[in-house]
Image 1: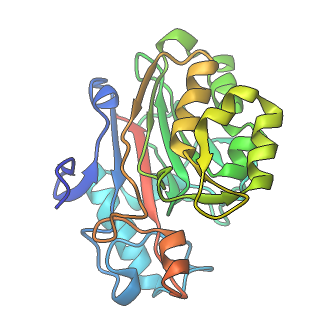
Image 2: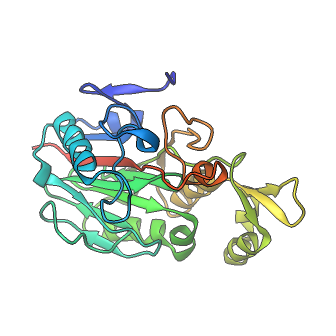
Length: 268
C-alpha cells in the first residue's frame, strides 16, 4: 500500500492537503482499489462504458461506490466526454446522458460532484478560496497545449472566484521519468514558451525526451496567478498495484486498461 494513500469513507484514495483545508468541499483522487471490476480492469475502473471493454454493470457499480463514499446519489456525480481540447462545461445538474463534450467542468452548485477520468493524463482539482466554486480538469498534453488550464482559471475568475485565493491540486499522473515523447512535442511547447524547455530532458533514445507533464501543469497554474498549488507527485506508470496507466498497458501489450476518477464537490 502506498504511504500517501488515505481513505474517503472506506475508499482508498489520494487527498490534497490544501483542498482538505477547505471545510466546504470534499475531494478525492481515486485509485484502482476498492471496486468490483475484474481481470485487467481490477478493480475500481471508471472508464466510459461505450469505449471500455469492461462490464458496464461493473463500471456503474464502481461509480456508485464512489458516490456512496462522497455521500451523494449517483445522479449527483457529473462527468464529461473528454476530447483533449479546451472546452469547459459549467455544470448545473448531474448525470447528463450523453455526457457533454469538455475537458474541464466548473460548478457553483452544492452537492454536485465533478469527475474527470485519467490513466496518465494530469487530473487537476480546483476550488475558490471560500469553497463556493469548484472545478475538475483533464489535462493531457494536447489539452495543456491548447490552453485548458489557463482557460479554466480564467473562467473561474469570470464567475466570481478571487484569483489570488484559488486552491489547486495536481493529481496522480505519468511522471517525467516514465514519459518519453518525440522531438515534435518538445518543439510544440518550447515554441509556446521557452521556459517550458525546463520540463523536458534528453532520453536514451536519440531525438526523444522525457516530459514532466504534471510539473508543467503546476508551472502553468503558477504562471496564471494561482498561488496555492499542491502537486501530489504520484507516478501512474510505476505504481501498477494502485493506479491504471495507459502507457504501461500499451508497453505490456494489454488491450485494455482502466481509468481513475478525480472528484471534487461543494458540500450541501
